[in-house]
Image 1 (cartoon, rainbow, N blue to C red):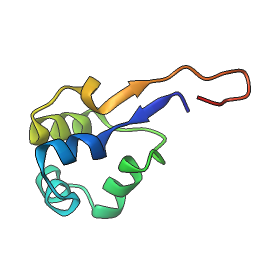
Image 2 (image 1 turned 90 degrees about the vertical axis):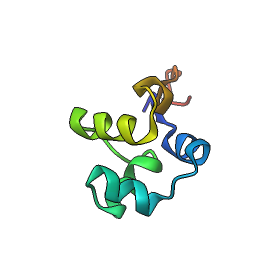
Image 3 (image 1 turned 30 degrees about the horizontal axis):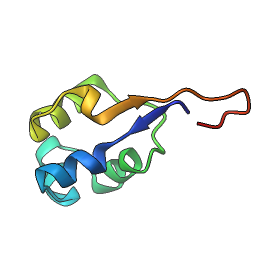
Length: 74
């Protein structure tokens, strides 16, 4: 997938734990882990909004587009 999730980077910059962020945005810790490890196939705008509010950041701070070659490698 050409979209990279940099959620762990923003969490480190804001010094917030996964447990605390999950509680603040109202999702389970396993679902947050799926986002952090780039295993999510989609994200709701409401979840992205909650993450950006909790981390005081922009969606572009969390999501990054990276070109893939013909074999699907980034």
